[in-house]
Length: 78
Image (cartoon, rainbow, N blue to C red; front, side, top):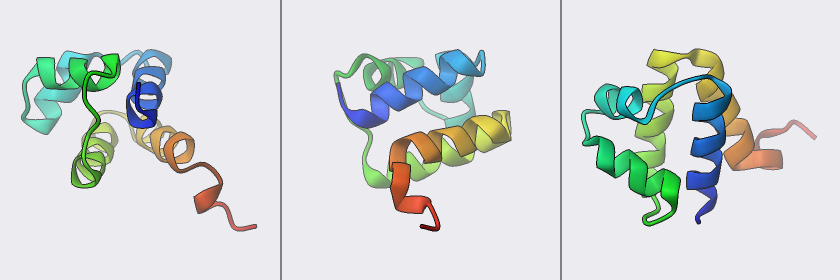
């Protein structure tokens, strides 16, 4: 499974969000989100940005957590 899928699965579970809710916010089929979470497909870089925007509309903390977990130390000020 790709890193984005692992992180997305964790964030959805932590924040009690559904794949369907994310799919609806993004305007994609739920099966698309399922494939990312399951690891069958990795989202493109552009799609990762769309995931963050959709998460932000559903739960800003979930979007922040996704970015932190996905990018890790790349975004820290150290």
